[in-house]
Length: 256
Ligand SMILES: Nc1ncnc2c1ncn2[C@@H]1O[C@H](COP(=O)(O)OP(=O)(O)O)[C@@H](O)[C@H]1O
Ligand SMILES: [Mg+2]
Image (cartoon, rainbow, N blue to C red; front, top):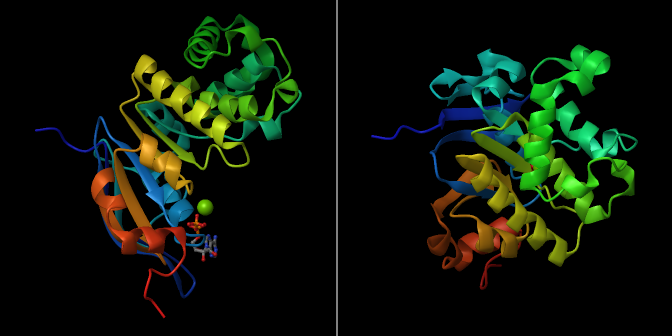
C-alpha cells in the first residue's frame, strides 16, 4: 500500500469570525500533479499555507510523511523534502542566477549565516546549484545578475530556486503570473521535465489559467468560498460545466 505524502484531515482555518477554509480532507501521493483552482478569495493560498506549515489549522491536522507540519517548522520540513516556491528574483535582483539558487538552498536549510561567510567554498551548495541550473536550462546564465533576465526567465528562476532543496514535494502559488501564454507553457514544460530529472515525487500548483491546468495537472481540486467543490481527475473536472464555472468565478449558464 502506498501511503499519502501529504494528508489533510478535517483541517479548517478561520481568521477571527471569518472562515477562510471550511474543514477539508485531502491526500496527495507520490506521482501526483495536483492543481488547486478557484476564484480570488476561495482559500487557495490559505490551503497551501496549511500544507506548508506556515499557518496552523484552526481544526484538524495536516501531516507530511506522517508528521504534523505545524510542529515541524520550515527548516525541518525542508529537510524532510517539502519545498515551496519563492519570489527571490524580486527580493534580490542584484544577485546572480547562481547566488539566487544558493540563497534558496541556504535559507531553507537554516544556514543563512553560512551563506554570507563561505557560500562559494561550499561544495554541497555548488553541486545543488549546478544540478538545478542544468535541469532548468539555466547553466549559461549562472553568472548573470537575475535582474537582467527576461521576465519569463525570472519566473523560471523562481521556480528553479524551489528545486534547490532537491525536494520530494513542491508547492507553487501561481508561479507563472504576469508572463505571456507562450512563456507560461515554456515554464510549465521545463518544470515537468526538471521534476522528473530531479526525482520530485509530487507537485501542487495553484493556478488560475485553466489552459495550463488542463495541460499539465493530473488531478484538480476546485475551491469556492473556502470549500472543496470538486476533487477529481482532470478529465472528470473539465466535463462538469457547473464546477468549471464556479472555479473561474462566473455563474453557470442558466444561473440567475
Ligand atoms: N491573514 C488573514 N487575515 C484575515 N483574512 C485572511 C487572511 N488570509 C486570508 N484571508 C481571507 O481568507 C480568504 C481566502 O484567502 P486566500 O486563501 O488568500 O484566497 P485565494 O488565494 O484563493 O485568493 C479571503 O477572503 C482572504 O481575505
Ligand atoms: Mg492566493
